[in-house]
Image (cartoon, rainbow, N blue to C red; front, top):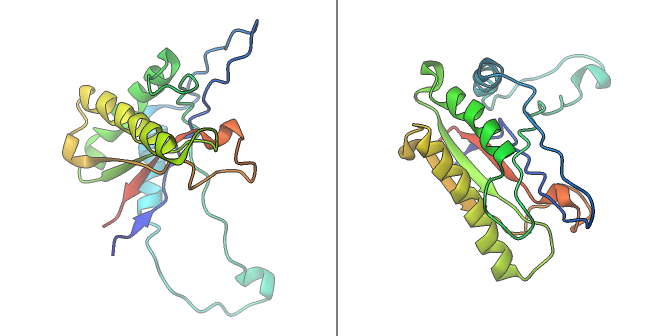
Length: 176
């Protein structure tokens, strides 16, 4: 059985067309080193067991670390990366080829919202993940370190199945 450590959420906040409104391009607020350091820190989390001797609040489960918002955007019903998404992936690709992460493998997971049928959403989510993998490969990230997979609408990020936030791509560090 594969074991995956959730290290980095790549949120694809996809464009929802609205007549008369232009989309503003969002750019990354992080650097290659920010991403590398985050992944290195997360890779050290591994599963462990411990006995806590203290109060209930002292022993309460710690929250999962927050991932980076990578701002990978697509047009609605499209797997084509926007210019802003490409710029953000340029930073991500630099991090993934950094020598400190040379042994790391990543899973690129595509997701959709509940609009559209199951088959269509599975195809679209896979195409989005493939688009990210293809772009990263063009930026010299070795293909054997990347695995694209589509989940369609099966793993929503929010409780509203139609929320645009559910249309995303996530990058996860593999610890298998």
